[in-house]
Amino acid sequence: MFRRTLLPLAFGLGGAAVLVWLGLWQLDRLEWKQGWIAEIEARIHGAPVALPSAADPERDRYLPVTATGRITDEELHVLSSVKGQGAGYRVVAAFETGGRRVLLDRGFVREEDKDAARPPVEATITGNLDWPRETDGFTPEADLGRNIWFARDVDKMAAALDTDPLFIVERTSDEKAPQVLVQPISSTGIPNDHLQYALTWFSLAAIWLGMTGLLLWRIRR
Image (cartoon, rainbow, N blue to C red; front, side, top):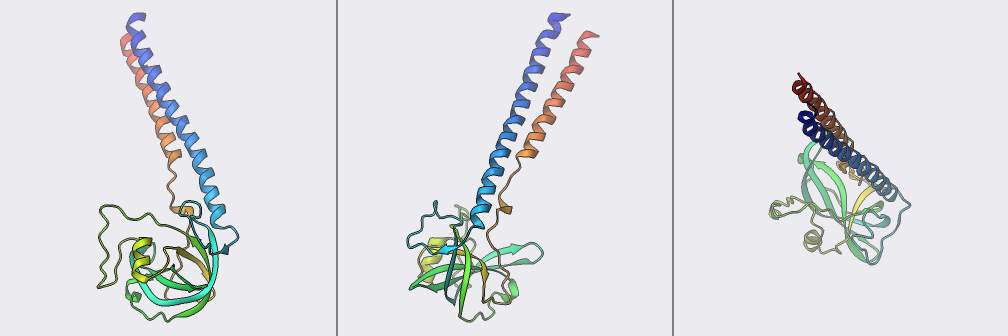
């Protein structure tokens, strides 16, 4: 009888051990992800500095900045949606500051406000530098005739508006277009499902042990 149960017992305990290890590994990943998100949040909400003369996409990602200048009426519209608002567009405008032109993501407008007048205005803005990673091989080319873009592509947008390839996502401004809903950078969109994964592995381990126990009971009958 013992020989008949030895292999199923070893298989059951070994499989459960692997599943428990996977659950513990996900808990380690959860701790790492929470620390990483906390670092991003601290960086996003740090004290703003002047625009760097030469920004680096890796070093300066999410860098809080402040600048005073002229928000122009030269805009690009990126197809988007916001919960509770529906479909619309993100407004990316040319921003003239300190003798240079950069890109400014002003926020979200509803579809009906896409082509509403937003005259040039002098403003002091604070925000965060970003290099959005929204394009892939399936992203359609922008519809330049209707001024509809399907992703925020810094290099192509900079070429279209004749600006430096520097992208500021607005957080606050002392001059605000009434139709525009600011969409500042936040860590809330960063996925963190490691706790659910850990619970899944632990649940599978419990089920595995239960099935092993049932098999051993049937063998011993």
